Image (tube, rainbow, N blue to C red; front, side):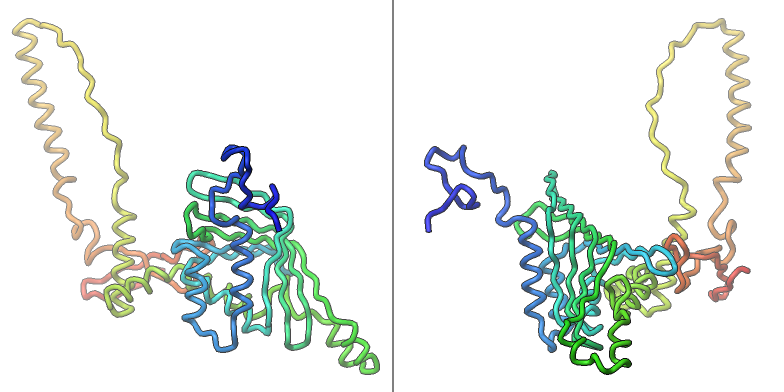
Length: 331
């Protein structure tokens, strides 16, 4: 079979200027095809190491995954980091899914200096459920991917906005239980919420707590500190950043032309200037002598970390440290 101009490896006989421009080894959409193949190669014995290797192959070390959808109680938006991405994909299969793949239609690519952005407004996440009943779920929405501009071409940001979903039950199953109203009533109920299983939704809610705690876990793994010492160290560093004054930009001194004055006026001005300088130094001395302990006794007020993050994801609240080293929460 001869190569055609539509072949990406087609070489024109008219010279290199007529060949198709291929700046990458593969196209960005082909990486999604490879990811689908890797997900199909999953087995029931796939452990955490397999999922970590899967995430390492397709996601950058600082990658983020975002899901946006609307439930009965309002819109939801969850963003998880690289360390939580493997567990997210594994929870999909723990909820009864036997097959998972993504279909991209009419996607648009934009090339940047260090990344490639793929915007697909007609993306479908297809999941095949084996329990509680045999059902095919098609979750449709918009998928925006950002790939790195290198040979690995891994995903840096993943944002999937779900618009609608459909649950498809084979006619053969309906015909088989046509005379059983209880089974028909069970078949008429949805097994997912916006195309996501309860396992996945519960994990996303848990990630709201786990994501801000990544700093504590990383410090515990790096320095082998106890959880309490990790918490104290992180809170103290955060407190230092809060009380540190903002850095002021350096200003270049402006040169001014000096005017010649008579000796009497210069002498009086110099004596007045000395008096002002001494007065100014006296005013600045108390502020310069203030120490950290005098401002805040017993290491002062440092933020306290709560396992229930606020609206902006911040875990810090006001807590005082007594001279004996114990935490005391301010009400």
